[in-house]
Length: 293
Image (tube, rainbow, N blue to C red; front, side):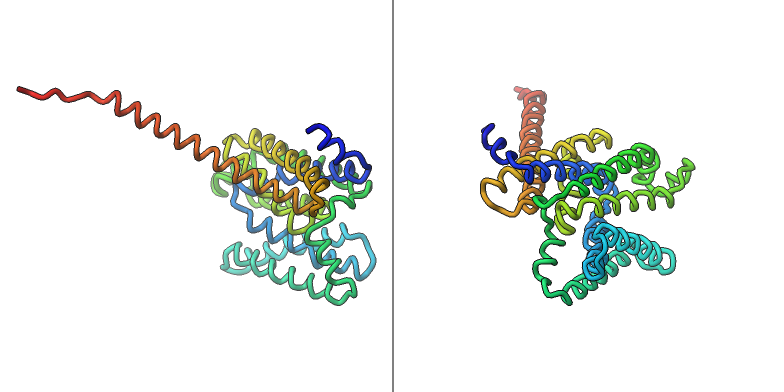
């Protein structure tokens, strides 16, 4: 078993992929815990797709892909806030419109390139084995910012998850807290897409935190557990990908989602056994009525 992992991580390429994957898993698990708790999964999905036009323009015009992704993320956040403030439509409507529009625009731009299929596949599904040192440095910087933001904003985010009115009552400025959370989410997507792709980053945002929430209730504990599940998915997924010759990013994401269903099945089985024992104990403790003669 040890050789299974030693062989997989014997080369510089897979070791860089491991570091990049661990950084991405940590960032996405930290902010993803709030995404799951606040029910922002649809926004996370939209953001993961919404960076595609900026990436496509970066390819066409020849500038850094990360800058393009960041520009698209800013457009997404501003657009959603614009719909929210100027119309009576729900946030989901604005998110859905921008989700489809930005994705369509990105595909149209990429389709004008000769390498359309290869570029689109790389952007959507990532190439964790192609992680470079500058991308690792970007991921490390984004992780530090994410940790600081999560720690500083914990009280505000917690109150906001209960309700905007509650946060306002406590003087925590829910509007600013919401924007700060969206900015951290955008930063995570932008810093992670080069590792796991714009589609699979969404799986990392949701799967490890959702798995953690099945097991624990306190937010800080859930974040730690989510990071643990994310790291396990990266380490195991990359090793399996190496030996089975499968797509690395997709294998990692598949392991992350598989963990959720495995924990769900086990936890439901444990709860079912517990309910049966309680039911049996209740029946045995019930008084037995004596028949009168």
